Length: 472
Image (spheres, rainbow, N blue to C red):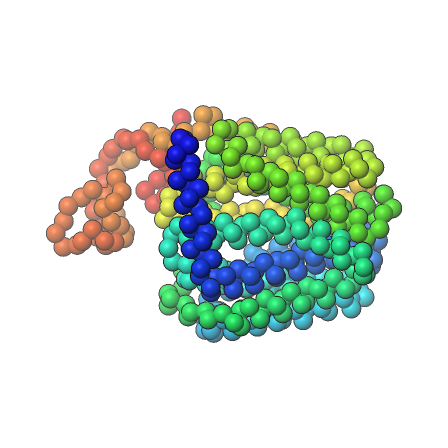
């Protein structure tokens, strides 16, 4: 890329960002998202400390089960939210969910029994699962230009990354002047502020009266995802990521409080250091990926996770522990950041939503298993043994991913089509429908048509015309 071309791209980025921030409605929605994310991140730290307060040595197990319930709510409730919300105004829906979340998170400050944690976390996660897809749909409606919408998604991703870094640091600052129970009040206020920004926003009604067939898309997406070799390898990498990150979340408070004997603020500091490692890699990796392959980034991530968990099994002191948590945060981002690129390059643009739905479901399934398992092992195997076992899981997952990943990974693959006749909605923009007829335009239309036997080479993805991956 020439210097002049790079300057043009930077100029375009600045123009898009400026245009996006001129959209006052999007600014209000983005502010609501950032505020609620900050509160949610602080609550994650407070929840870990609450689990330690109620269960002490069993805190990891309690936290693991609570977060598993959160994953169950995310996977099961989100698909249903789209159909329910079409019956009520979206602005009212989002505000009510924010107010309900504000009330529920405040109740966490008064919890005295472990079962109450499980109940409140499941209810809160169900409300969040109903909030997120509707919020994303609203953003898609108000930012219609493709380039601006992509930029909006980028800012949303940055907000999530900053939450992982800044929220634990904010929690550590608050814990220096107040007890952990007051952190739930902070989160409650964040949801109230989010609701206030939504109240000021004029959110349009849903533009599409016909709901998408989520389950049909998910079924196709799962089938296509698992038939694509590089995505099967990615699923193995998600096993590694889930194993490491789940142990970090469930085990940090136990290790810091029980093994190191440090105070509440140290848990937040450790999580903030991990977020710092993640953020450093997130800032550097996009430029690095222009020079190295995605596979090398994955390999570096697996190595970092193995080093971090392996050395943690020796139960290091505070300073080395923070260094290892920094490495773990960096390793997680080396895998998670390029994962979206891998999904995108493995799917046709028209099928992207189905592939990402499958990616969401399968990755969250990994966390659903990893959270309770890591918590259980931490209690019954000890932290040293659990770190070592999870390091082994990461190593094996990485080795299997390396074995599955196609070498070389060709985007364009020569393949054969047998002759067949079928009918479906199509246009004439792709190489499989270059036929002529006079009763339709080049827009989407449906008619019975025949595909002749052919062998050709193009960018290959699993889709309607390519149901199976070519054999070598």
